[in-house]
Amino acid sequence: MKNNSLIRILTFIILFSGIFGCAKRNLVYFSDIETGSSYSTNISQVEEPVIQSGDLIKIVVSTQSPESNLLFNSGVISNDSQNRMMSQQLPTNEGYLVDKNGQINFPVIGKIDIEGFTREEATLKMTELLEEYVKDPIINIQYLNFKITVIGEVANPNTFTLATDRISILEALGLAGDMTQYGKRENVLLIRDQDGVRKAVRLNLNDKSILNSPYFMLQQNDVLYVEPDKIKSVQASTNQRTLTILSILVSFGVSLMFNLRYILNE
Image 1 (tube, rainbow, N blue to C red):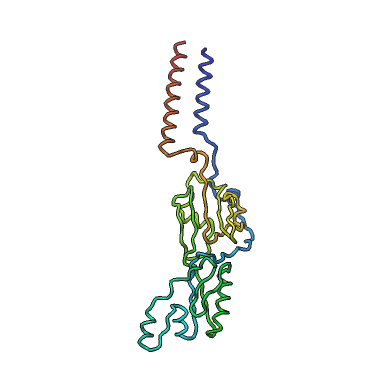
Image 2: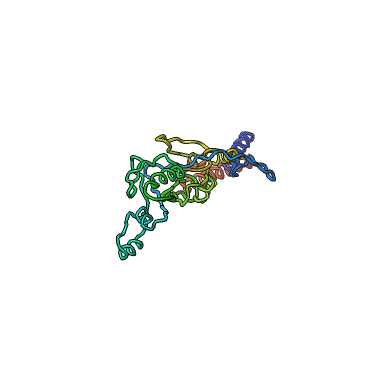
């Protein structure tokens, strides 16, 4: 009987240790780069973001003609000096929305197919079209609603609208306040819409090879989902976890006291 009681105590101790001695998780990015060592890799050809339906883009036209600048940048042109002064005070256009057909409606030119073009390609196309109306136009195209979304186990899950179309997966996580301790760095999900296809890719941020991945740089409307680890995923809330631990501690304490009293009375 005494041996059985000791076995029961040891069993409880082992179970208790198993609960709090969970497997060690790797919370270090690029942990396969050894401390004190260096790592370099050739940068793969970065896939430039392309203009999509729903994008809001700003197009600024610069020419040698003030009237042309006013016309193409605000859609307004004046015929006398008084109107010219009033027109110059008007704000420039607030962007062109790419419609469901992949087109924008540009002053004088009209409908222009622009979906699927990179900024550089769109700039070349706009330059060719405007050269029919003005001499040596300079075109500058920018995204006004370039956005990415970071959700899951991060400090600040959100959708971020950026002033640039170049952002890496690490920069996106930085905007979201980095992963929490429960975030699975080895299993980050990237969701991307491209050419009418929605695809999901798993990324391992513990692995240095991600630095040369075609998914290291994000694109318009990308979504990053940081999956929680198993401990977090089975918890309905922090309070539930606390109650579970307290319940285990109470049960363990009562059982331990009972068995020790039994042993001492033997």
